[in-house]
Length: 264
Ligand SMILES: Nc1ncnc2c1ncn2[C@@H]1O[C@H](COP(=O)(O)OP(=O)(O)OP(=O)(O)O)[C@@H](O)[C@H]1O
Image 1 (cartoon, rainbow, N blue to C red):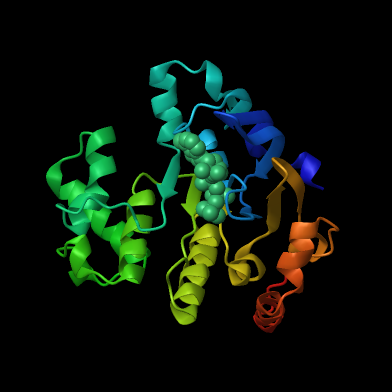
Image 2: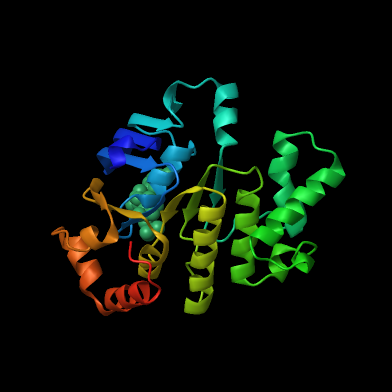
């Protein structure tokens, strides 16, 4: 069925080496338009390096990354800029500018990319702040005045500023309590559907996999060992996967997932 779908991210033969450490070697991955793809793997497996390689924050040692059908290793800077506008990035802590208010933070990509009149930029930024589930009065606050969960939502609002087609999220629920994490998952699921987003979600959170991911990719032994629906992935014989899906946390996540009626 997937063969007919458009691959918005295509990674082929990715290799990343730091000194003597080979992080990726011959890694292949496709991400299809409209799906929520969860990316998991042990600590240090190379999830963040993969994300960074895809979005251009890290130049791969070798291999090819194609975004929206364009080979990113061959792009002219001006074409790279056009591609960059088509995705949004959200890091663990929101990665906000501490000296700017939430509203100003969300306006940064709007001002950098488009010469919008100030009033219009304010209106768009406010819309994104509300879309990310923040109250309007959060707009005037500085990151230090927000809770961890609110900072993540502000980071999400900024990632949504340019109406991206693809959203990259690096461990968005880390540090949140279970209720906050479930609410954030629900928000991503709802926004993904409403805005027809493709979501690339790096996570350690098994609940997120069951709650919102259409497919899950597992990085082990320097490559993607399996990418499939969670029900298939959890039965894979890879030792790390077995350990991951046979513990008590997995059983709890599995029961939450089926209770929500959202088996992946
Ligand atoms: N710029 C860099 N220079 C040297 N080594 C790096 C660099 N970036 C990442 N690494 C190494 O690459 C490996 C993979 O890192 P990465 O952050 O992708 O892991 P991860 O799977 O996201 O781990 P975690 O789940 O703990 O966040 C680690 O051993 C890390 O130390």
